[in-house]
Image 1 (cartoon, rainbow, N blue to C red):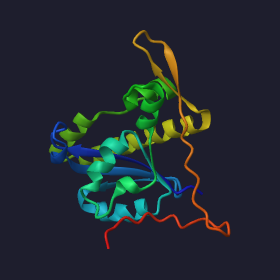
Image 2: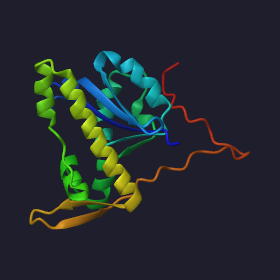
Image 3: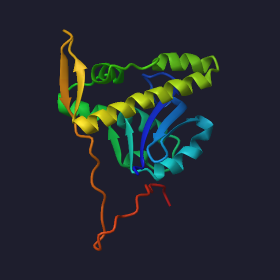
Image 4: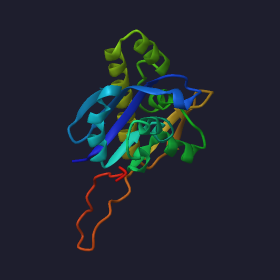
Length: 194
C-alpha cells in the first residue's frame, strides 16, 4: 500500500509578498487510508506526523508555493522530503507553466470548483467549511491528474487555437534505498534540528 500524500494549501495575504501569506487550510489525500483530511492553521501539528511518514508528497506547484509556505510552520525542512511537483515536471518537459485547471480540462475534462481568490473571500466571511471543500476538491483534481499521468506517461493542454497537445511526463518515484542485505531503509522523513 502506497504511503504517498497528495497535498494542497489555501492562504490569506498578499500573493506578491510571500512572507505575508498565512495558511488558512491544508487538505491532503492519503493513499494508505484512501481518505481526505483538512487542517486549519491551529491543527497543523496533526499534519506533521502524516507528512513525516509519507513516501512522497505530491502537489501542483508545491515546491514553489505550498511547501515553502508550510515550512514557515514546521520545525524541520519539508523541502527535503521526497516530493513530486507535477507543475515542475510539466515545465521541465514542455518549457511552459500551465494552471492546474487548464491541465485538468484538457486531460480529464474536469474543472476546479473555485479559485484562490474565492477561498480568501470565504476566509474573510468565516466560511471555513467552504474552503475545506474547495481545497479537498483541488486535491482530488491533483490526484486524478497524477494518476492519469503516472499510468499514461502523458498529460494534455489546449493551445490558443484549441488544439489538444500532449506533454510527456514521468511521475514514477525514485527507488527507495536498500541496505547491504537487501532490506528497505526506513521511510521516515526526519529533518528536525536536534
